[in-house]
Length: 435
Image (cartoon, rainbow, N blue to C red; front, side, top):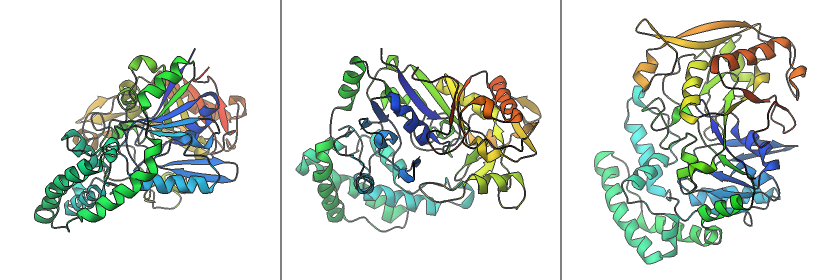
C-alpha cells in the first residue's frame, strides 16, 4: 500500500530539506513541489557533485523518480529553463521526468520590478528582506484573479491581451507610486513566448498523475520550501513569505486530498537560523569571533543558497518548534546539522519566553509579540567528540544523544532521523518515514 510523506521545514527555512528529500527518494516514485517559487534554495551533495536547486524537486537527482511542480508554485519559467540546463549539463535527465501543472501562476518581469521597488521604498525597520524574485507580487496577482497561468501560454493572443492589461496596472504603480521605471510590454511578451515553447511539452495534469501513482501503490514525497515560521498565515507576520509553507498546503498546492498525506516529517536544524528581517528570540552574535553564534555561522557555512546573504544564528528554540509541530501535525522530526555543534563545551535550548513578565511556552502570533519575547534558556553539556558521518545512535557522543533526548522530551514528538553530514550515507535512522 502506498505511503506518502510531506517534508516541511519547522523553522525559518534553510533546515536541510533537500538532502532529506533526496535520501527518502530511494523508496519513492514521485516528488512534488507544492508552494513557493525560486526564492527557495535546496543544496544536494551526491558524491563529488553539488546541485543547487530552486524550482526542480530534489528527487531529480535520483534515476527513475518522477518530479512534479504543483499548482501552488509560482513559476519563473525563464529561471526554470536555466536550472534545467544546469542539471542537464551534469548528465541529469530532466525533461522526460519533470511535469508542470497548467495551473501554476507565472512570474513575469514586472513582478520582480515591483518586489525591488517596494523593498527599496521601505524604511530600514520595515524591510522584509525579500529575495526580490517577484514571489509576493505574483501571489498577489493570483489572489486578485489577474494572474497569467501556465495554461494561458497555449493561447498567445489571449495571453498578450491580458498581459497588456496587467502591465497597464502595474506600470502605473511602478512609475506614479514607487518612482520606478516602467516595464516594457514587448520585451516581456517576447520572453514569455520563447520560454513557452520550451516548457509546453512538460505541462501535464499533475493532480491526475499523482492520483494514478498513488492508486498504483507508489510512494510519494511532497517537498516543502521555506519554513513553517515563514508561513503567510502562521509565521512572524509581516516578516514572512507569500505562501503557506505548512504541511496542509501539500494537498491544495498539488491537487490531492488530505487523506493522501500519511506522515509529516519536520526538518529541524540542531540550532536556529534566519535570513532577512524579523524577530528571532534566541538570536546570537555571529560577528564576534569565538562566540557560539560565530562558530555556528562559520562551521555551518550559513549563507543563503539563493541570495548568498549571511544567515542569523541562534540556539535551538523549542517554543517555536512546538508551534511548528502544532500547525503542521508533525509525525516525526529529522534533526540536521548536528555536527555543527561538535566541540561546544555547553549548549543552550530556548524552552520558552517571558512576554510582559509572564511565561509563554509557544511562539506567539505576529512579529510584535515575538519581538518582545525574552528567551528562557536551559543549559546542557556539549561534547568534544565528532558526530560527522555517524549512521547509528550508538556512534554519537553520549552528550549528543542526551541533547537529542531532551529535544524529544520538550517537543513530545519522536526524532526519527538525524543528519550528520551532507552525504546520503551520513544519516542516522531510528524510524523510516516510508517504512
